Image (cartoon, rainbow, N blue to C red; front, side):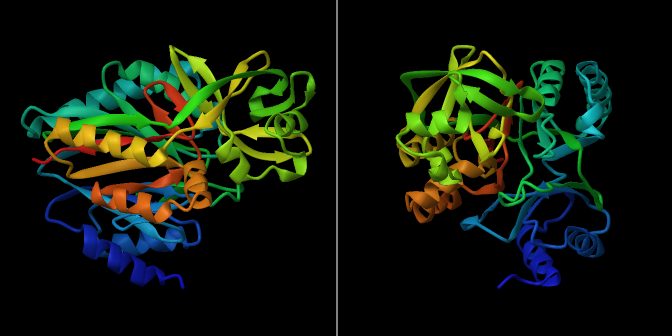
Length: 366
């Protein structure tokens, strides 16, 4: 049974409140009345900036959950933040990226002075149904230069109807948030996936890039041909199948998943940009658990311990964990490594919008 808004906020604030809060990051199931949730937080913490988004699942202190609210607060003792709202994303152009970034960096240069020897990373939260993530992350990532950028796209529990981001009580669609966060704590940004490309290739022969829609692959109806290549029929195609049989594209010497979102009479809809002529490879999943354990071991060694992780985990990874009955085990690993975050409709890393990855920022102990 879902907790009331008042109960959920009381439990959340009891867990994350601290002296001198700089900001609250909030990741909320769309099952909740989000404006009411934000108003209740503001009633208890009226002077604290609150930002975040709706989710396709939450990563809480006890691991993965559905239909909940989770979050964390950043202490002003160790963090300085600056925020820029990008709205509407539908009219965002590449040239806007430099103007937005330069103004935010100049503003942030002043606020970060109160910290001793701070380092800075950028957090980007996008409307997960805007289909504008590629242009936004490419422009902002390029303009940020050496400042690392990570983030995630808001979800709505695989309904694909409306995703929202929020800032200071406002609930927005067709918008993005760029946050510069400076800290005197050590940190590492990361991205990991557990797929290996196979030799079998396919070519996108008809597509509508603006809709991330593929109508034909290998000159055949896309859904039928994809199903045939994995030994199934079109009627068998579900998110479970898409999670287990991803497609990958090679770029910059690495392979990136081009995850399928859904199928309908028009063809295959993707979470990421897709275009005619692109060559994709079928991929095979490796050991998701071992991949995570190895990554966290490396981060812990580099940082001398993990204080917290802000994590963005693709919803199709959740679907795979559920299908393979791994949720309890992976939840335990997430909890042990203090991960707070959400299941996304895509992840941002550097200048790339990707999918079916786990991406985030690991913070060391101060």
